[in-house]
Image (cartoon, rainbow, N blue to C red; front, side, top):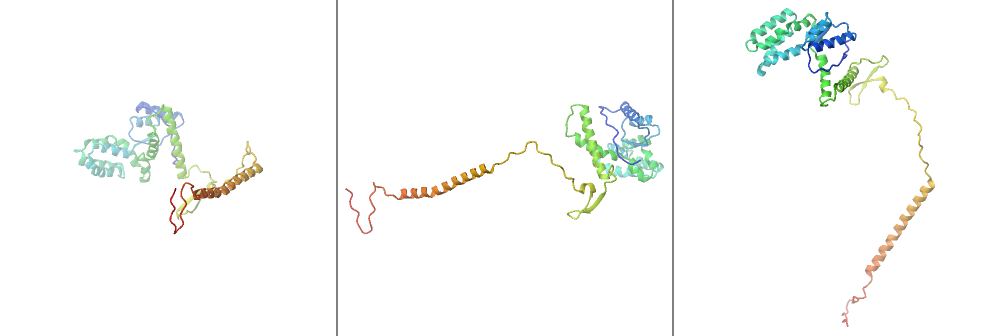
Length: 291
């Protein structure tokens, strides 16, 4: 057991039931899944029976987190903290006998007020107790379905923004691509699937933070040979370019020299006397009458 997560398949079904889960288990067995050690499920209808019928030596464990949530549905919101505190000795007991005593104490305290909450644990007792036979370190792995809940969260995040799918095949393709993307990110975080020659080196980041990078990523990239151009650019003739620049410069100089002359001519025209108006009288003389 290498502890590597691997998705075995995706199935689309409108309603789950015993026949559906029997079909899934039979398909996995036909594909080569010969032995199953432990299966942790959240109380799906018909799944434990289908697993035990296909792999008789397997151990089916009910998810403790889902069992707690199922019992809390019958508890008022104001009493949920107290009920959860009373249930903790049941699933943290060192063995099955201690867990049974804790369940009896829980029933004496809350059976009169919430009988359905107590009955939920009593009905699922045979599927709840298998993980108590393992050491505490292994119980953390097999008592809940948290290992797959993170994957379910990623799949819901991808599918909820798509709305409706044109077919079941389109939905399966989208989920499969999301699983491939999630699996690649998980291998990068855990270092699984890396080549032996890919060594990790550590260094100091620009802001004083510890950074780690792969040797292949820090090595310089090999020089790429440029492909020849199929249509080379046309050559630029400097003679024609210089001729156009000289012509443009000459037009600018000519316009610059003409502007002051036009300004002086305009000033002369403004200063020229009007023959219809009388001439200005010098100072100290009286103006002569106009005939």
